[in-house]
Image 1 (cartoon, rainbow, N blue to C red):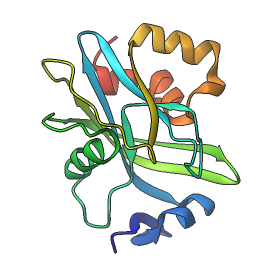
Image 2 (image 1 turned 90 degrees about the horizontal axis):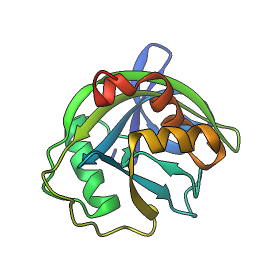
Image 3 (image 1 turned 135 degrees about the vertical axis):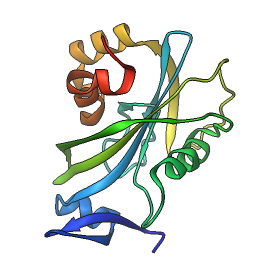
Length: 173
């Protein structure tokens, strides 16, 4: 069941293989984390070998929980697996839903648990090259400006979060 993600098939939540969920455009559970420190957000550039949206910039961490995995536990697990990031405390900021084409005939139709982590100091990172090819810290204002001027460099979900759900993640504007 570890390779399966929670997806709705009709009205029933069922374990579904991740690639199948994306190819069929099934509504499924997801987790997104934003790490902020000293007025900047940590973003990641997805590894070139990812099966969708390779090389695009995304939020700090985004993933799918395993079947029956708690969303916060998933956030902590993937921060460590993708970025080598440990010792942060992701705070749940709410749940949103979006649908976006991500190329190759795939669709992300996600019900996302959003988390924000705000460590006191810049955390040490140890990037997993199969997941992440680069990271950088950027102010929210600069990130919004970059995503508006060069949207093709950013994942559809990051653009959606910035345009439609910024207050849910970062608080009132």
